[in-house]
Length: 500
Image (cartoon, rainbow, N blue to C red):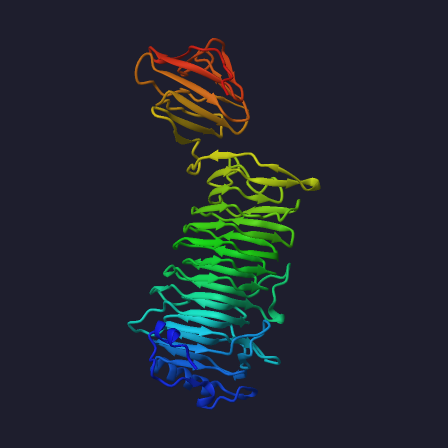
């Protein structure tokens, strides 16, 4: 008997008689071809806006099941017991194509049965479940819900969203769904290629949700070529890449996921611009290789409170750069070694910027230690200086100057300039400082970096606007010097101090 609340939540007809696929001739004995009977049953349910049941047993499917421009219906199996699915639609057709195509379908519910590849099948579909909009019509695919299901197989992808559609394809939910590969297509380390779990291909695919459930044996558990998706508390294992992201789209979120025996946590493709947020995940790398793969990706990435080490030192965990990399914020993470957050420099362009605070890493012998904090601001390609404005107590304004090359101009437009050198260097540009605004203006240079910053006197360097007490003044780490503007030059008015 149907639950009235479930029917009404979908807008289904409460006075209609629920039907089973067996009422349309399906036998579900694993031998009889049930394709036509299931298609007829789906046509009835989607037309009557009612509930269709699929019984205990294996319904044999040999061709694509499709629904076009349908809404408000449900397909339900028998609730699984002991981790097995009593109700299953088993593919026994040729290789290629799609098993279940939802074309412009919205507000449908699918639960408690399996879409699977049958034992002894000569091939498997390219895609097991395709949510798309191919046929012209007023409806766009959205708010389809898949709950407590096993979807296994697909030589290209198990689930594909927005393969051809340019219309919105949004708010589809996969809750407690197991997405898996067949044994013959299970991803193997060192073997190129393999199937994808969830494949999202259009920028208008947005606000799709994967909640709990599992993904296993995939070349990429989730691949978003365009668009976005949210993963929450999903178990991911035995896969080459957890998430691969490219193109534009709304924020992609990886939250509270867990898994062992995978290789790469996040891969960014060229031209990735949509934000990526990863929080509270536990990723256990099962194979040597890159934990992160950064492309020529201008989009921002935030890593917060993730466990990437699971308590152990991994010396062969790496980061691969196929481009400059993203604007990266990393706060409160645990890494398996000290090299997961490479410091960006202009000489070696790694990451457009890095804001790393409160991270921890393991070393040999599983000795843990806090990682260095970094505030290295965004800079365009080839730019010699970047600055980070800092606000504090009333009347306080500071600016951190991130020094990357020995040529530099500083515009002291406030009382204190913080310098953070990435190597021992001297400021040798001419002029080193741009003109001050008025006589008597003071600026204090404070070196908060780990390397010395050298200033060269104007008498030693033609065109320099510096007048120092000696030809060269070194500002050591945690040191400072005050300069005052008089008569078109900056005069040193204090010895080098160590105020920090």
